[in-house]
Image (cartoon, rainbow, N blue to C red; front, side):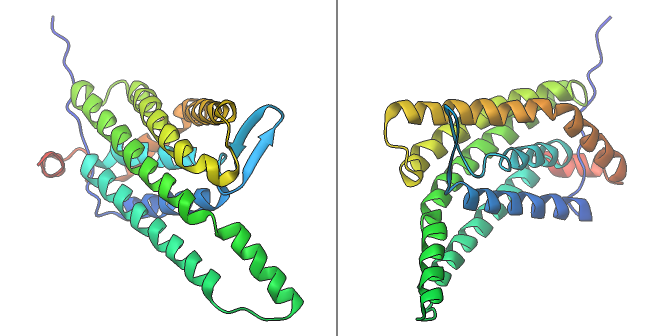
Length: 235
């Protein structure tokens, strides 16, 4: 007897839930870019100040890809990209605006330049890494879903995250390392390995929670699984 594979189902992006997920992804990425300008060390472990936030961007990307499909995920990725570029431009404007000339004003200007000055380079690395990693992550999820339908969600989450996070980490670390003070190959390798293992590990640990959130959103979305929506997503 042949096993019946359920079809891949999706929801329309017209509901408020998609907008909330998109906004959350953009905020997480922008805050991660700011935090990533600070090098962080726990004993032999080298990372950056955005380490605790960035995995959430991929968790949100997984939710969008699974519930709304590749087109909606791509829209979220490009919107986040544009907002990150806008944030970086704002940092530049803030830095060049003339500040107060007293001692406090000069000290504050120096602190702002020190904190936000390196961010545009961090943003460049983050954006390139985010575009490549998230696009690959979303594409793999959708392709796996096309084969398995609604089954084996855990496999889609883990498989796509592993590949996407590796691409993301490698690109980001290659660009960001000199900015945060990593100059030798050993430290760079440490940075890449720790970043990949940590981010992927966090996503794997959160797979049960991510699965529950995805199922809850699917139940809450009135258009999820309708023939019209599935046809529109697949078109």
